[in-house]
Length: 112
Length: 114
Image 1 (cartoon, rainbow over the protein chains, first blue to last red):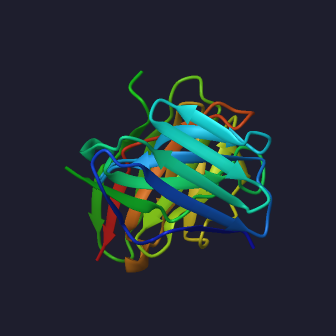
Image 2: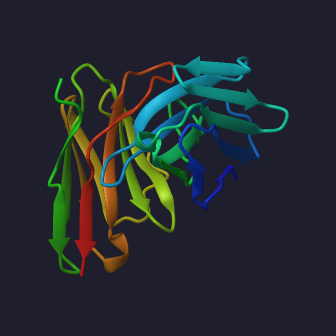
C-alpha cells in the first residue's frame, strides 16, 4: 500500500537559516506532489505543486524538489522567519482523480 | 469569496447520538473532499465528490459514516451512532475539477464524543 513518511519530530532552526523538510513515499509513483502549511486550529493551506517531470519549483522563499528515482521531495524555506513556524504537510497524488494522500506532517519551529 | 464554510465549529455529543457536519464549498468548485485529522492517524481522506457524485468512499471507516452532496453548494457528513473513537477534527475541502488543482480547506469541525 502507499506509504508517505515525513519526519514526525519537530525541526527547530534559527531565524535566517534555511529549513529543509523531507517527504518520502513508497510503493507507488505519483504524477505530482503538493505541499501545504497548517497552523494550529486551522485547515491546511496550499503552498506549492510540483509535477513528476519538474525537478524543482520555486515561489518566493520556498523551493520544492521532486526526485522520482529516490521517491523523495524536499521542501526548503530560505531566510526563515518566526512566522514560518507551522506544520508542513506533503501530499502526493492519491489513487485516482484529483485525490491527495497526506503525510503526517513536520512541525517547524523558527526561533528568533 | 468567503472560502469553504463548515458548521458547527465545535460539537460535543454523547456516545450513541447522531452527529451531522455541514460544508459549503467555494462557489465554482466541482470537487469536494471530507477529511478526518487525529494525532495518531494524521489527515485521512474519508470521501470525495465530483459534480455532487461520490467518487471514492473507501476511506469511510464504517457504515456508521455517511456523506451526501444534494447540490453543488452543500454537503453533509453524518455519523450514527457516534462513538468516542470518532473524536477528531473533520475538515471539508473543495477544488476545481480536473488537473490537480489545489484544495481549499475549511476551518474544520472539532468533534468530541464522550
